[in-house]
Length: 586
Image (tube, rainbow, N blue to C red):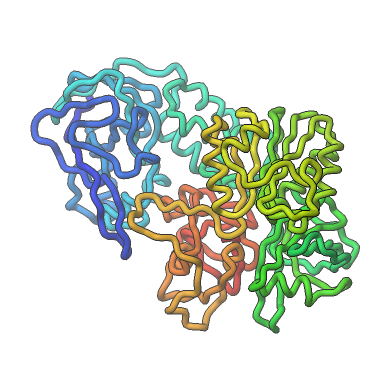
């Protein structure tokens, strides 16, 4: 019979790590005597990151003595103490290969149910001073698992563990863990896992995403792991395109129509995607900029719309330095800010040059003649700073159920209320409400960072679910740095320690480049962090795919091979190193 060997608790604290401070509860110590187990926690226990740990579905973390023995032998670490893997219950028995999701156990006075495998992150590597641990634990099939508390009670070291129930669908912790992280991901097994009522909501969401992607035939890397798992992979590299047309779209916006120079068709973009353009306004040193496509998806041409600010080198070059017939280096279309197939109402919400990707969406909706209710809300300074105004109105009128609502912050005397614009001011909750925003709509938001933050908050307060609010950022995206405290976001920059030699790494979205140094950096992630490029990560060992991004040009190699490699055209920057000059979408 299985037995509870040690009960371990610990409250979150700040721990120094890589010149940063991490708030974590992974430091656990054995409890003397008995311990009360509540619905969310053991007495005296806590978690530093409640997004990834803790709560009713992850109240108790279990790890096995046999896994301790495995790691002692593999790592040559014979001084491991119970609780060192961050577990609450160290148990003899209950191996991940035998325990099934939905199994129920009586321990002491309390009753528990198995809900999911443990999700390993970088903090277990911190605790064991072995950065590879997340990958090692996941690939070995020894993650441990979480318990839900069905009946509160007291437990103590030495208590017997009695199995008192099990789920009809028998899938072990080991099998469920492998189904998410390790290829292949058979659809029939995904369907089996989704039938387990006890499976925690997060894992259920992941498996449903994977199953949906499989049924649609979408070549995602791993749609179940993270938002970056929905990156559409495209072949890296640039292609020379001819400037077929140059025109002013407004006072400060220039529009460029690009066409194939060799007669070969272009890759058809999804509505809302962007391309990366490599410019050489000052000789050999290139500038890389990302611009959304603003016309109907086409295999014959792309249209870019670029805002030209007074201090914009790239914008000024595109407006003043190019002529029709000139050539530009352009990547294949990429990006995840794209229309979802849905029968819900659709709201396109933009400000300034943020109209470009939603204008492409509007073109696609009009071309398809969708009967969904479509509302485009746009904010501009005035009529002279409102590009494609008439084009947008014509597209909205072509929709069976289309409507447009425009606000100008400082309308000109020549701007006509009720014709050119509908209200003076800016979008806020009350304006969105009066404009007819529906809480069940799919909403696509693009504009300056503050605008998107404000609109996301306003939409949420109106009852729009967060998973139906889709945003696109012009510069670097939103960071994910779990547990890091006291950090301030700085503008991306070239590091002071840049040696000026070695392969160049271009971070296209952030608009900077830096030289790779094999001595200073172990991964592209570490270089990005040094440059204050916004990054997303959790495991830092090629497991979670949070760091997955587009590889726009160049080749990489992995220092630590990912468990589930991304498709060609994508890269896991947490464990990748450049092989020559590269361009990444970060």
